[in-house]
Length: 213
Ligand SMILES: [Zn+2]
Image 1 (cartoon, helix red, strand yellow):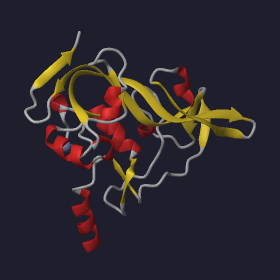
Image 2: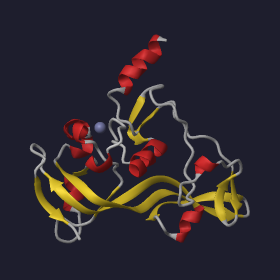
Image 3: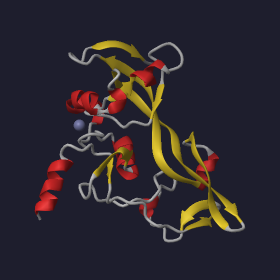
């Protein structure tokens, strides 16, 4: 049992959405059902509320070694949908913050602050400082946003195409969440748009600017 205790200790310092080496892709059989990509043995947890099919992956956080460059699809989606902190997994509710890298906020179109699309789930106020220190993509600088309105924007995943040989992977895509092609998508990652938010300063959490309706 000492192994699992050590793993639990590590689990405390590994971000909630990080994938672990034990969490492998599961073998699946795809079929077309009612014109949609489906699993032969599909269950209710395989689709989200919008009817999008999600890629199946094992769920065993804390077992094996953390793969810091990989995101666990299901925990990522839970964090996005449920406003869970991507680091500690705690529900953030209205205190959810989004951290954008220098690259992300400099690429925002239109006058800043402008609506921004991101694939990163929120962070709770208590995890901001640690994220800024530990996340490689934030090391060159970042801004912290506190949104009032967050909307689903796009989904990344693999599009499947029906062929004579069956359903085959056709293209890795990122498409609008309401694109009709989501019917043939094995979804992996949800992107959201922060439509209305305050820009929060890091030290004092004082609002330094805002955009809103
Ligand atoms: Zn947190």
